[in-house]
Length: 390
Image (cartoon, rainbow, N blue to C red):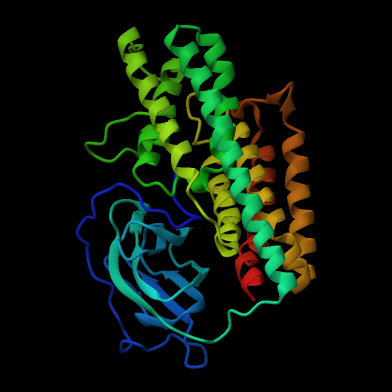
């Protein structure tokens, strides 16, 4: 339930920064004397230290190292501190991960989030004007334009289907048709999961729509899909009191209203090829951090539906930029194609009827095999954005 892929404004108040980024180089300095666009980030328990707070416009690479003892993530935000330009998450202690993004000149905010919660440790970052790079051939520009247009159409289509199926789902749930609602639950959520990184970029909507009970922060009201999920599958809960008709209507109407708002917002989004490539990686990270662990659908055990949908979305994003990568790094293109196929073969083995077996039916060996396939795909996918922008 995070937020990557597109630069969008969200209707949240700007909170005060926790701690400003520490800067170990003079303003305008660089993390790499040969390449001012290559920067390092040290994320610790109480600091977010960048090698420089300024870089020239173009393809920037942030090499993020976690020197703390909690899993962390790193964001490049717009000037308002709300717009998510790009992010890299799930960086474990002593682990380094790279974030590559094409950043035009402007004022930005960087943030590290130890524990992957809260406001994070923030600081200002400036991208200066530059006339270096950025030129592409007419043929490549045609591929770029096509990828961006196709992805926008895909997101709009998935959002429309999400809205349609959510309407049906909440009507069944409110009417007390629980068997029908349970059958529709993973089907409707498929469309959310396919565009999850887009949906999560709206920082106000995502917590209201997709928060898991285990991830709630103190004082946070629990609403959305998983609140209703628990009411439909209460078997794993202890001393659970089912929701009454009025409560059901309240949660259902709230979910539908937020889904309508999401559908309205995605109509105005635009996508860049680096955002699409980062989104493909982000969707696979959603698999690694929630679906393959069986944590996402704790009550219904429908994690494999979500798993497949995240893979669907990641593959669509990859295939959108595939013609560009084939021109620049054919070996990477071949590797990504084959590893997507290998992961899909494992998922297909768990199909049952129009869906999948529930997650509790998987053996530890099958879970391990899926996890290994996700990890095998993650490595080349982490190089996708750099290849697209090379």
